[in-house]
Image (cartoon, rainbow, N blue to C red):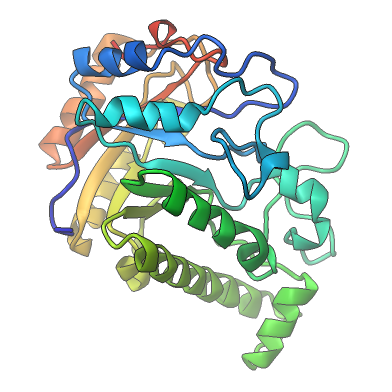
Length: 325
């Protein structure tokens, strides 16, 4: 892989977080209609989902059949990849890391805890999947790596998009033991912050070595919603940068021009990411006005980056209902 410049210019990030309460997942999906819609829009790369924040899987999994979405009616991801590859469209594969509602319910001992010993993220009786899984716990070796291995060995994998990979200081027993072994004091907030960054970088390097040992050509990106100075020390774990920056969704219009100027100094290819949504992710059935979307994409080109627009596949999978055209 040429790490300097390999990304296609016209890309889609196709969100697909669907809870177990939603029926008919993929019921109306037509792979040819889906891929032909992309061709008409001149899309040459689309990120599709293996596993979402609810923890559900969207392909036929022998390793984790209990995690296959209970209402999934087809081998959705495999069909998306096959149809796109027949049209020379890249399909990086999305999986989540630190938000996984299924795993959080099964293994609460793998969730990060704060200085008071409480779980970090959504409280038990509130709606949401925002509990923070701990990369210093057995979660990585017992679930995440086997899951990634299954993706790489059973699906044609152009790349991997690891989502929600963030610095989360934690007081859980696994992290405390590792901190003490490193000569750090778990009761010291500054030590916890330092170790959180160092251990997250170790996780990224280890996972990238693992991925490359199976598929050395796959692109790799770890998303945290921002790329900045702390990423410089771990550039070797990445194949490229994806700058998630939806101006109308909380990032603001000053975020991208600042972050891209820094990201371009880090020696690997850069992709700008905005969204078709009126506001932010999950604002389904909304459309950003054309002038705003054009400005955002043209600014990416002016900054010498590739372009990605976030979209959402409807729960039944009918591509004619999306904004890709």
